[in-house]
Length: 383
Ligand SMILES: Cc1cc2nc3c(=O)[nH]c(=O)nc-3n(C[C@H](O)[C@H](O)[C@H](O)COP(=O)(O)OP(=O)(O)OC[C@H]3O[C@@H](n4cnc5c(N)ncnc54)[C@H](O)[C@@H]3O)c2cc1C
Image 1 (cartoon, rainbow, N blue to C red):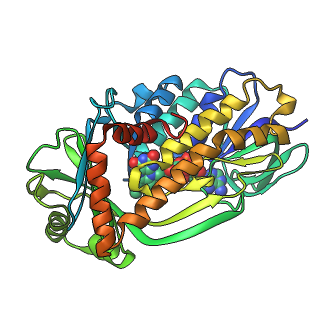
Image 2: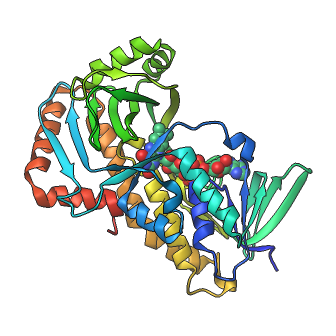
Image 3: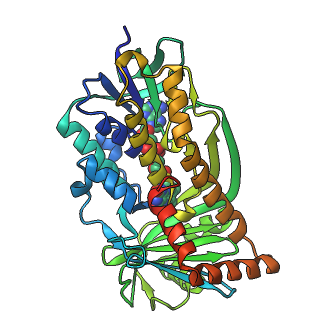
């Protein structure tokens, strides 16, 4: 008999969401998480735009209230530098209370981990996993919780480690881009509008966050390094130059954090008794803020597929095939959508600039297409 029905590797937002979704089912669930509360106190400044669909999932998991105040996005303004065409998407047109909500990664991770610890129902072990072995009846996780090497068996190992362990065969494309994040304030209030401005080096997003704005600036690795080393005034000048004057003068840049960008797709996402979800299944470019939203849907749907199973069926071939089939369209949609955006917009080829302008103009002029894009970004491909 395995030690666990489901053992989750990685208690980040996606792993914790899965554990919460499995509460109250009478299953033996464990979570192996490498970050100790002390290490978790180190700031991860990345802003996360949660879709309205993710809000619904977090409400069902009982964690939405822990995220307040999240800043609502009421409009999204998309444009390209040096080209015509722009489009505005509004929550009112989409008949949604908001197009999304901005929180920072640490707040989200702490809210989910806090709910997990407060409500019990699963065993949370602070441990670093070093290897995973799939098998016909059970899988094994090898880990160290501080007292030397240990191992636990499970009917299903759900790998939500962000892609840290080689749990699946990965297809990878290096974007040769780095994203820089920081915080600024602007002379003109943001009025809950999120801006996405495409530049030849990559997209520049300004997301409303509290009274200020979170900057998510994709550029070349060399430029990113330069930006992070600039004194505050020089950084703000570069930002102003890239974004323009729509929000007036920018002030006060917070600390810079940078992340190299690559597309990583697990194919297949499952092997005997082991399945990848969240960033372990697909790590996307942050261009459209899809990665975590997609990961939360992975967690929600994986828990859903276990609802009608007896414990003996969990992690078996039929279960993992059913899960893979259920997630195929949504995963594929997220991967293709973000990858196409990056490839179409991150260049300065004149004919493509015109195509982009025409595309943005058409999107602005065609309400059904706009509605499709908003629903796609809100609920995924199954929305
Ligand atoms: C700059 C930036 C902006 C982004 N903005 C958005 C956005 O607006 N919207 C959106 O939806 N997505 C966004 N994303 C993507 C989002 O951050 C990821 O999709 C999300 O964090 C994935 O969650 P996860 O739980 O799968 O993995 P992670 O967040 O990476 O969590 C993995 C967890 O596993 C643990 N772990 C790792 N290795 C081990 C091990 N060996 N043993 C035990 N535990 C381990 C880690 O400590 C961590 O807690 C953004 C990404 C970046 C870089």
